[in-house]
Amino acid sequence: MLKHLIDPLDLSLQELDQLLELAGRIADNPGRFAHVCQGKKLATLFYEPSTRTRLSFEAAMLNLGGSVLGFSSADSSSAAKGETVEDTIRVVSCYADICAMRHPKEGAPMVASRYSSIPVINAGDGGHQHPTQTLTDLLTIQRSKGRLGNLTVGLCGDLKFGRTVHSLMKSLARYEGIRFVLISPEELRVPDYIIEDTLVAQQIPYEEARRLEDVIGKLDVLYMTRVQRERFFNEEDYIRLKDSYILDMDKMAMAREDMVVLHPLPRVNEIAAAVDNDPRALYFQQAQNGVYVRMALIMTLLGVKEC
Image (cartoon, rainbow, N blue to C red; front, side):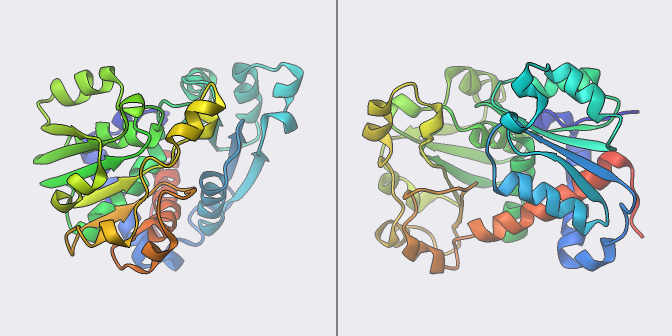
């Protein structure tokens, strides 16, 4: 049966654990998987700018022995002529075996999946979901902490528009012993519907904080995010809030020795460069894990077996 990944919860907990196990095996021995997708093609349909997500999808498919086609902006596709997502995916289904789509409009990958004859992966839709970044985050947490349950996770920065935050909360809430600390200015706090539907509904303990230094000492994981200029309606609000939270070595000194720092990237100035040399800073390893987890996802959705 044709399967897509539009929302992190499209994978059952068992399927998620199996995918992460496969990603771990790939990370430990990537050369073993160098030809499993030979003859397969991935289409990357990116209607808005991306560096890490697009290139990591392309690297993932190339590492598996497959090939890649697609476009990196709406301007370079027939969308500039007015073609609908529905028609685009119908045509692309004739050319490729699997598709990764990023779109500024929430729900566009879901629409595409209804008209597609190949698996569709949501590579980010507006401020809504970013499931493959979530898989990357989960793999990084699992490999660094040895578990995905019984953790206190701090989410810091833009928690209103940050699709990576929304997806990660929904996924981690499925594991036992998870507690969230939500660190943001009032204007960028987690939307009420996510608090109600994900945290309150599942009785997940959480607290909200306005200052990172007040809570950093209790965290197992600190997930930093940038304040996203492209999600704001006016420049004044962006300028006022963009420097609200900056992680530096003074704040790191208040943290536990085994706390890990994640960031979906790109960063602007919310993490000082000096933090990069701290062994707890895992955001570049996180980017590498993104290739491994996308390799595992491509294999899983195509039904490709290990050699």
